[in-house]
Each structure stands twice: as C-alpha cells, then as structure tokens.
Image 1: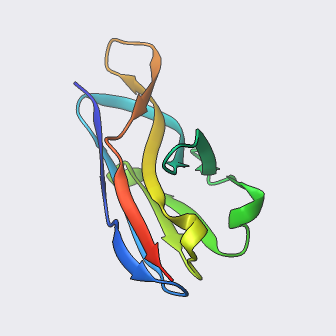
Image 2: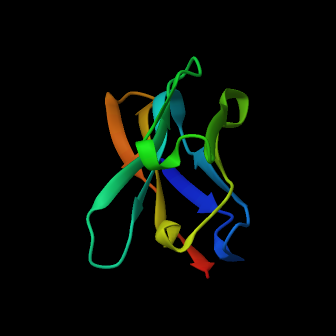
Length: 120
C-alpha cells in the first residue's frame, strides 16, 4: 500500500510564506516525477510545479519566482516553498507522484490535500 501524506498548510497573511511537505510511504521501489497541484473553490485542479527524480523543475507561470519545489529522494518527500502569497493562492494543494511499488508497474498517486488560505 502506497500513500502520500501532505502537511504544512494553514492560514497566512498576504505577503507571507508557507512550506508544504508531502511524504510517500509504503512498499516503494521507485518514484519518478513528483509535483503539486491546487484547486480553488469552483475551479479545476491546476498544475503548480513538478520535479523529476533528477531535480529538473517545471512551474506554472503564476508561480515562477515565488514558489520553489524541491525533493529529498532519500526521504521520498517533496516540498513546496511558497513566498509572497496572495489571496489568489488560496486553494487546496494536492501532492502527486508517479510511484512504482514492489511488484507493480508505475502508477499515479494523489495525496488527500492540504488547505492553504491567504488572508488579505
């Protein structure tokens, strides 16, 4: 059984910062890409950022220069450092990872989501 568990969400004032973490656990053989997505009320789930196993990153345009994605392969953990937050960043943030469990092919997994609320 493989699962992703996010942490680090919460309430922050505009201009502030938050750091999200997402740890993968279970019978993991290998992890390819990891990433963060977000979904605001009434909107679709959108890409925030992704990172390959070797550390190559990709960001949505609105996050460039404000958000930083990183990962610790030894800990099967991906992070999202969010700076200069504004009200438009308010959303549920979801972790995503392509994981191969022992004896299984690669599969796409989602975390349960963590709420980020930015007050103006």
